[in-house]
Amino acid sequence: MAPSGTQSASPIPRLIHLSLMVTPVAFAAVVWFVIRTRPMPPAGNPVVHFALVGVALMAMMAGALMALRIEPRKAGQSDASYWQATLPRAIMIWGLFEAGALLVTIAGLLSAVMLYPLLGTMAFLGLMIGFTPGRLAGG
Image (cartoon, rainbow, N blue to C red; front, side, top):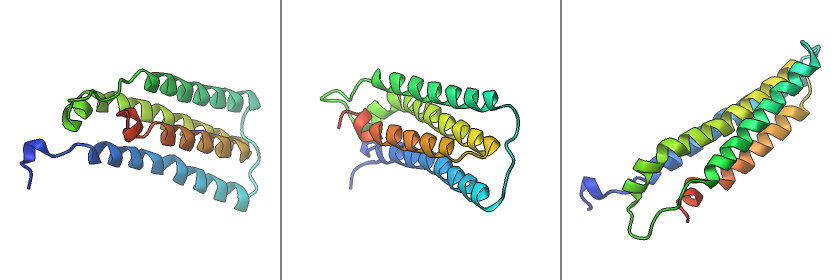
């Protein structure tokens, strides 16, 4: 059995990554159910809905650009030391992805248009799959 100081830290980033993936997907499912079961009139100005979608997509693109700047793990570097330095930035990036998906879903709820949450959730899942902890570490 390995001493506690040398255990791998890689399950923690994976757990955080997976937990951040659950919320927008569950929220989009609830919004889809609400829109399908209850006739909802569009609320507010459509320009606001488009603005929410634009801000959400900009947040997702900013997160993707920031994720591209994370350096992969060096050859002799341990998982624990790599994730100690990288995890705060990775959480911020995944949080931008999550915020974008939630904003797009709110725009869909306000406009009663299911296309926004569908596209936002698909973009979110694509980004989260593209920037998993293993891929950020260079695996």
